[in-house]
Image 1 (cartoon, rainbow, N blue to C red):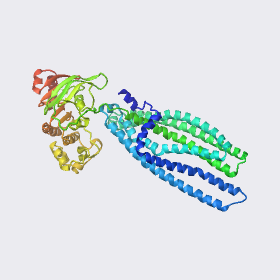
Image 2 (image 1 turned 135 degrees about the vertical axis):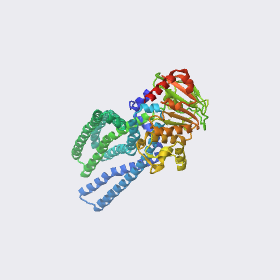
Image 3 (image 1 turned 180 degrees about the vertical axis):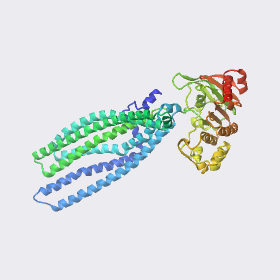
Image 4 (image 1 turned 60 degrees about the horizontal axis):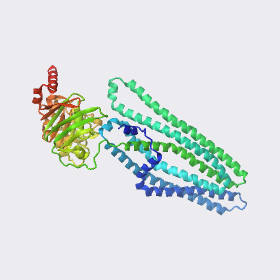
Length: 590
């Protein structure tokens, strides 16, 4: 796990050749269109490089005593025609690459998001949500630039450099050899520059990711910040994050601020030197002008390459962090020989189960129990006793270290996760509602359910008591996190969502906590109906709500201390008896 977290934070560098290899997997399905775009690119480069030769002929003809006007007109038309064709090739090349690039990024985003969906809850607890959002949204866009812009422009500039130099050699070998001197200087400088700027870009990306994580957490927790008057403290924290981005970004600007003027200075000196040498060698005016144009075309790609190093480093850093995320293996996944189960009877058994979130800091210690089909079992105990952990293990939110968990005498590690979770309905204390409508939150956008089916379920769990009063009924809008509904109303919608999925096993984790008295009555009525659905597992803080459970399991520090019915446990006058007495006295005092 620790290694996975290090990779998520971007601490592991991936060699560029490996990045190219993994990136090519996404390019391969669109390889034909990429090749077609490169054919257009090469043709465009050739036409563009041939234009100075036409211009040379025109200038030389103008300088000659025997002026050939027809030659000048024909070559001018040729110059115009080639320029138009070149623009057309650029258009088709660009459209092909943009279309292909968007298809590739669509697939990449899907792969990244699906990989995140496969991760366990334990991994999500360790991974900052802001960092994940940055990877899915921002880093995939940087990789889109890599496919649609950077790769092609780098290739174009390299082809330009080679092509220009061949034409320069055609014009004059001496001047061409002289032009190599600044090229060597620029090549060495660019190599050193890329090494330095790569580390700086990683640092910049890290600060941006930290900022996104910070904003995600603190905007979600703004209510707490304001309640405890922590605005000034948070302002200072934000200032530090902001300053870290400014410093990292300034380092990038400083690098390019020094690099670009240096390249420009080398270019100016090269032009001056070549012009002087050209006239010294007695070249014609047309040849000197053509060589000057080629020299410009020679240095422009080099300067463009320098500029594109910025984008390349961003794209490589983005792809590195994306692939680092995709290298994080899900902790919980299906075995090769796992099976589908269409229907569960509902018998649940724990055999000597040991579980720890971290190493050997055991949350559950040698836990064993059996809950028969259609029974209602309740788990009680102090905070941290392991009640919620047991429920999470049944649906394989986490993997146990030792022991076995069985449903209908089948080890759940041999059951496909999707099949397992489909059969188990979960109702939690903290209900999450998505933006959308009430119906969309109950059906989770499954279009197979009609309004009548959804409303029948709402009536079954008593959610119709408030839905019918709403102006738009099932189409009533739900704002972010369902803040326009009370805690009790959100809980009833959660019940409806669960029952609609027709589970054979029900899990309720403090589902009646923090509910007003009126809504609690509705929820208790719903729970009585739900007992007929299948096996029910309940974690309840108030012992009065579980008195009629078929089995009550008392936990303390990860171990089962007592087990039995309400009356059996009271007669033992042990831990459960003490908990019940304490709650009873508190209720009397209230």
